[in-house]
Amino acid sequence: MWQVAPAGDRALLVTLGRSIDPELLGQVLALDRALQDRRPIGLVSTVTAYASLLCYYDADATDPARLDGAIRELEGKVEASVPSGAMVDIPTRYDGPDLPEVALRTNLTPAGVIELHAGREYLVYCVGFAPGFVYCGALPEPIEVPRLASPRLRVPAGSVGISSRQTGIYAVESPGGWNLIGRTALRLFDPAADPPARFRPGDRLRFIPAS
Amino acid sequence: MIEVVEPGRWTTIQDRGRLGLERFGIPAGGAADWFAARVANELVGNQPDAALLECTATGPTLRFGDDAIVAITGGQVSSAAGWQAVGVARGSSLAIGTIAPGLRTYFALRGGIDVPIVLGSRSFCQRGTFGGGFGRPLAAGDRLAIAQMVGHEPMSEPWSPSHRLPLQGPWEVRTIAGPHPDAFTPGALDRLSATACRVTPEIDRMGLRLETPGLRLQPHEILTVPMTAGALQVTPSGELIALHVDHQTTGGYPVIATVISADLPLLAQARPGDTVRLRPVGMDEAARAGRRISGWLDLDP
Image 1 (tube, rainbow over the protein chains, first blue to last red):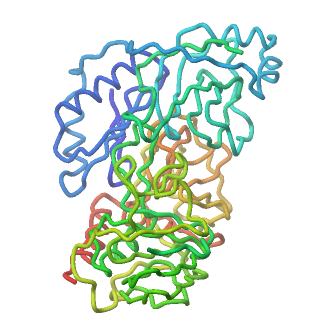
Image 2 (cartoon, each protein chain N blue to C red; image 1 turned 180 degrees about the vertical axis):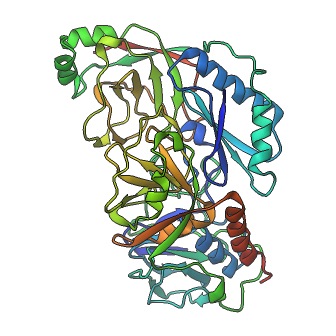
Image 3 (cartoon, each protein chain N blue to C red; image 1 turned 60 degrees about the vertical axis):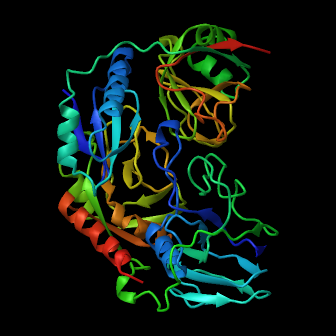
């Protein structure tokens, strides 16, 4: 059952599920496409995450009950498939400041952590938090670690981090609470580019160890 | 041309913000107190999306290389008469100075500030370090060119005091419950709404950290979801964070309630130590609050 709840007086949040699951992401992206196609009256823009979708609306053109109805009408009718967007290699220097601590916590050597993190395919579940930041999953269980107890005030652009079942790349310098294990020189956010973010949900990526 | 002699504490170029780019991690941004900014543009006869200066705590000192018509709104300054269009002669200087009460003052000049549009807006985006002409807050020596975004004649009268928002706490801020009521124990929002929250020194355009004396909420975790301005996030340690215009576009802390858009300007003017009381309202009251303010703006100049 989808849940539709107000997120203030300008947006509705649609929750499709509560897990990190490629099929669920497929449904989110299918709902997003259906809404772009049908353009219910008053819908301004949408934002997707792992298993949810936010609809910003123009309160002068529609009311939340009407938009809620237009969204619910699509339940069970969107054609979802497991996302399989472009595959991109991310050359990564595994010299992050938290790599030794992650190795310690997971009873692995740093090389063991790198071997598990690199060389496998990840799905981009979400672009958000800060400009161009990518949330990817799912991380193999042996290298799952919780987020840092206190976040860093400054994480450099290009940092590759892990947190519970997720791995991600900081596209711009920002605060951050993920364990930093590496860094890529790939530019993930460019305000002059169209689109400005290098990845979108449904893309796939692979970290390639580089020196 | 206007030269920045002293930049002030944190002065940025803003407009109405950029819509629809949250999917790239880019917040809407724009003037934090959108109402005061909009009035400043109205007073000098600008189009509503002309760029202006948002000054924080201490405003800049500006030297005018041209005659100009300017208006100052929002947080109060002692250097100039606020809420009215005034002429400034070429060669003169204006030191905007300390802002109080209120935190943010808007400085509009007739025609607007001429900076390039980046991703649909002239606003400075702090997290992405782009826009706002310089990709940073103003610095001494910056030169601001005047644009041609004029919409009508400048207003001859000051903006009516009865058509302004309060600039001083204690603040009453209206909220819509949710979107994550399930993450909290029943009655949590009532308890929060009965609490006099206190603004901490940790405030910026991204959000305000609030203390909730005598109350410790203990939410369940949620999966990362999209976030809106006004979202009242509760961290695992029970801290309250009110997201503002430059907010993170997604987040993993549950949101107990969301500030209505008509009251976001109040949070833009709140200062550390101020008291904030939250009051849950229905969609009808939120709509009425929005219509009340837009009604003030629709008055013919």
